[in-house]
Image (cartoon, rainbow, N blue to C red; front, side, top):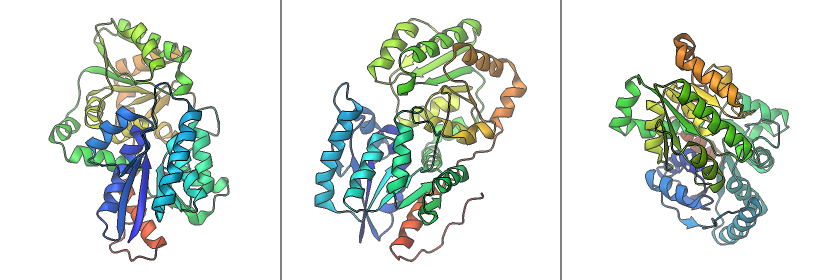
Length: 379
């Protein structure tokens, strides 16, 4: 029996790796193990529990005000000991976090094959997003399996001379995770089939490049929106980062039409997305989820490694310019044609069977038979 070790440590990783963990656990030829770095302790525990995942290993690295250098060194040292004892047959990492990069790097040092879920996303600007763009590029160089979510991601890797025989077009596992949650929850199913008539705006903001002055600009835009559109309500789950909370609480706490709430679990987040008319975010995963749920998303970043959502018409890059955020939100609140156009875009991120394609690819690598293979995605 082959051992697959899936590494995760942040909320987005847990969401997107959970379908793969589940698919391997259902396959009798693999032992599916999970390692949590706990890069984000509270949010990791919350989401692991929600997806019914129990970590076989927990590195417990998180400390208050942790730095990138700290989590890099601690994850590296603690993983080194786990790999030396466990020797898994393959290690899976996801996305662009420090957990993903160091997990892949230490596995490479131990000559363990690395599978990179959601490979090939690029802005080609090492400072946006920071440090995630560098993490992704580095993982591509050491991965034995690059599981790409879109054709653009595949083309990015080909242009970087990543060997074609390491690239597998699977779609994005976020679609798998989202469908899994909605299909198993009657209240979410009901929300999905209904149409929200209120003007609720969901806001999430936490990226490093948006800390400080950009976060102040975001908050000022939100204040201008609720002041100008008196029928509008904002829901803002506030990231636990103290640098986010200091600004957001200071500027938005006392406004009666702005609900500042604690971070929510995935079920609740999906419910808020379904109830919202517009989503304002600097998150990567929410850009993808908004496309799945057909919710217009305004991306509070200057660049996105997910340009597909902009190209199909479901998202708009607004950056952190207060006036541009206000202008685009106002347009969608008042121009029904523009709003409907954004809700009718196709989902460019896959069909919800990415995890099974990943399992098939790894089965073939180990010379295991594949019964009832899943067809390829349309390119």
